[in-house]
Each structure stands twice: as C-alpha cells, then as structure tokens.
Amino acid sequence: MPEADIQKAVIYCRVSGAKQVREGDGLASQETRCREYARYKGYEVVSTFKDDVSGKPVTRPAMGDMLTYLRQHRADACVVIIDDISRLARGLQAHLELRESLIKAGGKLESPSIEFGEDSDSVFVENLLASVAQHQREKNGEQTKNRMRARFMNGYWVFSAPLGYRYEKTGNHGKLLVRAEPLATIVTEALEGYASGRFQTQAEVKRFLETQEGFPRNRRGDVPQQRVADILRKSLYAGYISHERWKLNLIKAKHEALISYDTFQKIQTRRQAVAQVPTRKNINEDFPLRGFITCGHCENPLTACWSSGQYRRYPYYLCDTKGCKVYRKSIKREHIEGDFEALLMKLRPSQMLFSMAFDMMKTMWDARLEGSKAQVSTMRKALTGIENKTEQFLDRIVETDSDTVIKAYEKRIRDLESEKTLLAEKIGKCGTPAASFDETYRTAFSFLETPHKLWASERLEDRRAVLKLVFADKLSYTKNIGYRTVKTTLPFKALEGFSAGESVMVPRRRLELPRP
Image (cartoon, rainbow, N blue to C red; front, side, top):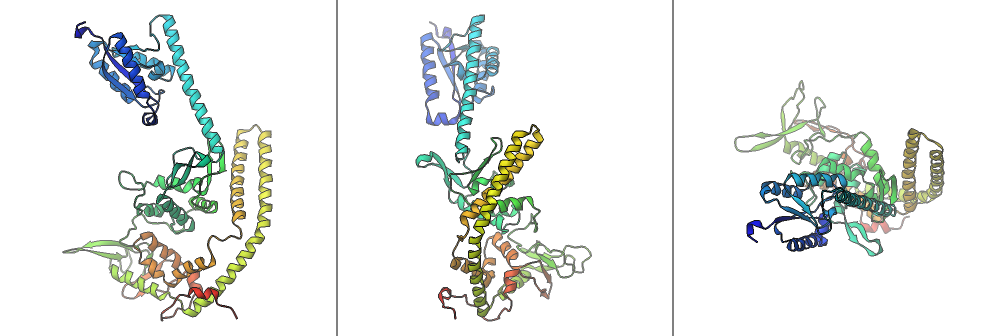
C-alpha cells in the first residue's frame, strides 16, 4: 500500500492523577494496547497524547493539544484510538461534548474495547457505557469519602500534612502525622508566643516566621497573612481534629500535639479580641523603639527615619506631631537607644532581694501544687455537668423540626465539647507542672536579673518582648534630658530597691540550703 494511502492515527491515554503516573504503569499499558490495535488495523501512529487528570472535566491539557493537532491535520482524517471508553471521559455529558469536539476537529474515535457506530443500537450502547463509567467514578468518590471520614473519626488526619508535620508509615497506624523538624519547633514557638502575648498580633507572628530560615514563603519571599491565620486557628496542632462539613468536632487525634489545648484556646480568645498593643506595620530592625517611645513634650509616639548626608545615611528618631515645640527636631538613634540600654542596666535587683524573691516563689509554688490537686474533684464535677448538658441538647435536637433551633443547639454542643476537652486536659495535667521549680526559677530570674541581654538579641521579636515584659506603659523621652520616670511590670515592681553594685544570680545550691 502506498505510504500516502496509510491511515494516520493518534493515541489518547489518561489516568486520574500524577500519583498513578509515579506509582503505576497505566499510561504505558494503555499506549501498548492501542498500538497493538493500530498494527492490527494497519494504521500509522503519528502521535500520542497523555493526560494525568480526572475524567470528569472536559478541558484537559493533552486533550486540548490533540484537538489542536487534529484541526491542523484535518486532511489526514486521523483516527483517535483510546484503550477504553472510560479513558475518554468519566461522565456522560463530558463524553458527549468530547465526541462532538473530535468529530468537528476531523477525528474518528475507535477502541479495541468497543465499536463506535452511528446506528441507534451502537449509540445506545456507547451512552450506556459512558453512564456506567460516570457511575463508577461517582461510586469511587463516595467510597473514598466514606473511608476518609471513617479514618478521620478514628483520630487520623486524612488531608495534606500541615506545616510542621509530615506523613510517615508507623506501625499499625498506616500513614500518621509526625513532627517535621525544624518546622515543628518553629510553628510551636509561633503558637506559644502568640498565646502568651510575646507576639501581640498576627503581624508579629508573620514577621517572626519570616525570620526563620527554611520556612515556606511565596514568590515574593513573604509569609502570606492567610498562612499565619491558618496556623493559628488549627486545633490539629493541639492534638484535636475537626471537620465542619462532616460535622465532626474535636476528635482526639492519634498524632503528637505541638501545643496543649489550653494554649489553643488562649490563641482563639486572643484572635477574637481586639489587640491591646497594636503593632505598626512599619516597625523594623532599624528602629526597635519606634512606636514605644513618646515625645516628652506632647506625649505622642516618636517616629523614626533615615536621613541622607553628604556621604552616608544617618538614623534619627523624631516627633512628627504638628504643633509640638520639637516638631520634626531629630534625636540621634545612638542617644535614645543608648539611654534605653543604660536604663535596662539599672534594672538589676540586689542579692538580698533575689533571696527574698526566691523564698516567696518557692512558698507560692508549693501552695499552688497542693491547691491544684484539690481542684481535680471540682473539675470532675464540672465535667459531669457538661456531659449532662450535652445530652440534654441532643435530646432537644431530636424533638425539634426548626433548622434555626437545630443550628443553635449544634453550636452550643460544639462549645460544650470544647469546654469538656479543655477540662479533661486540665484534669490530666493537674498537679504535674510542665517544668521543675529549678528550671522555672532559673529561666524567670535569669531574665529578671539581666533583661538587657535579651535586648542585645539580633531578633526584632526578642527586643519587642523586652518592651512588653519589662515596662507597663510607653516611655517618655526628652532630648538632652532623657527618660522620665518609668512604669515597670509587676515582677520588676516587686523587686524594687535596685542596687548600683554588681548583682549575682542566686546559685543553684541555694535550692538545697536548709531553712532555719
């Protein structure tokens, strides 16, 4: 047969996803069978098109390329070979649309599995098989969803691993979320920092995450605000999973939690409340005191800027309030920040005050331990009360037909479940401190003794933490005079009577000295 008379053919193959391409041989198997069919029919295969997408949509990359090829070679009247009718589409409507597109592009559909014809019986069988393919797709989807929901109910996360976790095959669990370092530690620090007030706003959490090397960023090199919000609202990090559409709420998860549920609740409370110390968007490492220092004349916050000189740029703080007697009069950064560092150096309690504070703290520690054990009985009673209320609301849902009332009851049940989870966690931890007295004492008193060391950190969030932990209000500064009387927070106020001499940390052996 002359070469010009040989029928040209193209092959179309499809699998449902990229995973089947990586882990299976579906595309290659389909192509082999189609080529075998082409040899049997005496066709010349001129091109092969492969998709790795669902059969539900009509628009697909390789399908679009094939239709373009058919239009450009309409004179060849190419045959389009598919392994099975389900490879063309997994829905009747999609099948009919693609069949029409192939005909308009000059193609003729053929398959080793079915004979396509134009008579009523052939069309009926074709449509029936397309409908069966659609039913199989929908049934597979339902089964997959049901299996995912059942596994979710058993405490397993079934979606993409969130930041800080990765999937790992573990014992009898199958694929289980496990900590992915260093992201797990970074996310934990961000969550606990926001809960404790170290980060006052989501903007501060965002800046902290952007300082962490290796934390995922967008194309601009930023951490999106939405990503920060998603991290802060996920109960998954507290060891509980929820799915609103499946009506599953606070299921105890099998994976390791990064934070406690109590910490998670504090985060949600802070997210819903108005931030007490709004963070300016233009705070940066160049001027860590901007927004916290006020003008000594008008008491409005000082701003800051870089001023260009003849050979280099110079950093200044200044008052930008019109009408103020020092309006736009600059203060050198080294003066205002140098005086601040000197102020921090003065906040050094004497040895005697440290010893007194230690005794007070140890007494309070012991009293809290005894009191926490006595609270267990009270919390157990409260837990029983919550369970009774939940059963009452469930009974009311059964008795009512009002959608509005049902939604209100369901919301109340979710709130009660949250309270129950929090109480259960507190009961489990009651009387068991997160750290020993020795560890807690040394961490707290190390900061009280030398807050200027944390201020010397290169991280902006550490410096801002010093401002929040040491000072109860903004500081007022007057050029050539310095800072006015400062208001310190309770721990520093309790250690009044600062000494000008050297202060030495109470040694570790102090914990074991016998008391008179």
